[in-house]
Image 1 (cartoon, rainbow, N blue to C red):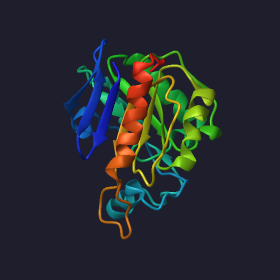
Image 2 (cartoon, rainbow, N blue to C red):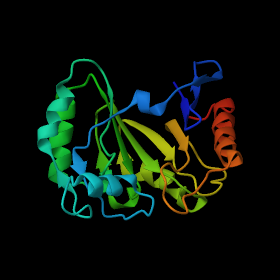
Image 3 (cartoon, rainbow, N blue to C red):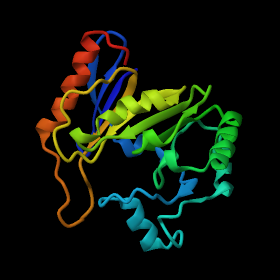
Length: 219
């Protein structure tokens, strides 16, 4: 099933097996955050996680990620859920021992789908046999679309997805081979000088996705 979700406008394009169709969906209704690691060293100017950590005093220093293993028990829920494990961190900068504990717990709880995001796929080499792990990259501009290729080269196993959020310019043509889920969105919040994505940027990515579907690319 191929899905294209548009954060904000709540658009989703799905592949039902024969043709793509558009349905309404809210991404927040589909995914639950599980912040096992809090903190990130990348320093994006638009980072909502850093602002939330400072506001609610979650950890002392956001640039020094911390692991909260007590939250692993959340995976024991019986009802299948979609968990985003990197809402306040970057997967590529997790310590090896953190990943080992997390993936061991995931193995014990195969009823869920587990999503990971990174902005630095070049900083990690990782593989897994778990089919319910989804690895993705964040692409905010045309300068960053090479992250998609690096994702495929550095992380193996599970599934691939891409988040074009927030979009700062037109990404242009991208190679979506192997990508099974695409999220597109603009910057939210009240940051001074925040970017506002243009509709034509969104449809450019959408068109690339649909053309790949029509030509039977491996999506």
